[in-house]
Length: 102
Image (cartoon, rainbow, N blue to C red; front, side):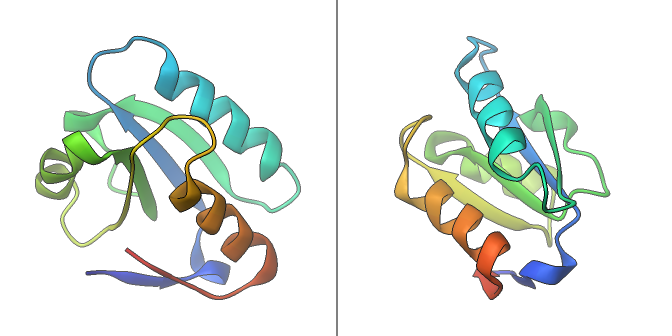
């Protein structure tokens, strides 16, 4: 498990596999929610997670592949693309300060 202080988060990557659009919607929603936080949000394939990602968000079914593609990065797996409690906790922690344990 990797932890990161919210003040050290500069880039969140939403990693996907199928490209069906749900993860693109999640990335767009996160950009809006974090607009004034200074945190960039990108969308990438799970096998192409950039090295400068601080936090990786992905569906729980892709977590093992994301860990292999981005070892040492904070990984936040979720079950549902919109309204998942794990994503809500991440946004709240970034806004209010704290540590992301992922």
